[in-house]
Length: 125
Image (cartoon, rainbow, N blue to C red; front, side, top):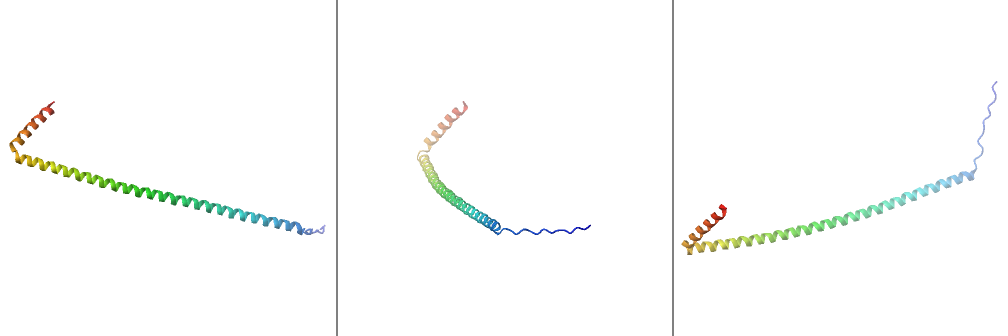
């Protein structure tokens, strides 16, 4: 009851169809390679532009910081000069007041008493 089993042999492969499949596979491979290369170039170009932009922004920020520091130093120097002038004037006035008190001690005491009395009257109100 055993029947002989027939083994089917594979039909011969059409070489032209295989060649076409291989050719198309090669085309897909090349297209993929070109797409990857193009994408890589685009990403590199974009990265270069971003880097240039960052360098430009950093340079601008550094310039602005330098200008701000220079202005702050300039204003500080001006403030120091005005302070020194005010101190010099105050010392000059004190010297004049001392000289006046030395030259006219009675008038100085009278003026001081009068100013004190007037100030006391004003502050009581």
